Image (cartoon, helix red, strand yellow):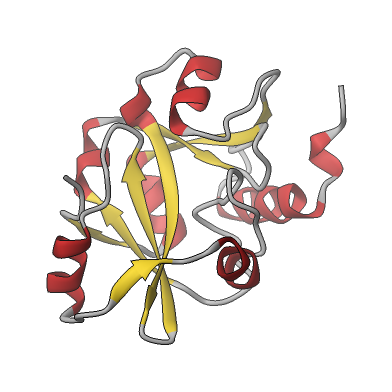
Length: 160
């Protein structure tokens, strides 16, 4: 099996989480976690405990929304919270350029550009959640309250 832990994006995430809490670690999965369903199957957990890191474009700026795996991000709620009319999903190139990660492995942390982060409050149902760690086969487990601290994210109701 390929050693995913030597890949630069995974190392960037690992360094970030270890600095925050030395007990946190990147988990390498035998099967892909490219989608929330894949991750839940691999980890044998509820799909809602999987954190989807989604990049949105707001005018010429970008922000990350962290959404539970069993929810969808509500563009209408986002527009109201941000008081913006034009909010859309970023494309694959914009995701790579702003986060340093490819779609399927976008972590909620360790982005190459400073991004504001909104965390959907529905994730609070779970004590621990799993987030991508820079590659589709890599995740990390983190306590929900730690997720808020490590991302410096703002808790909002942004899902439907």
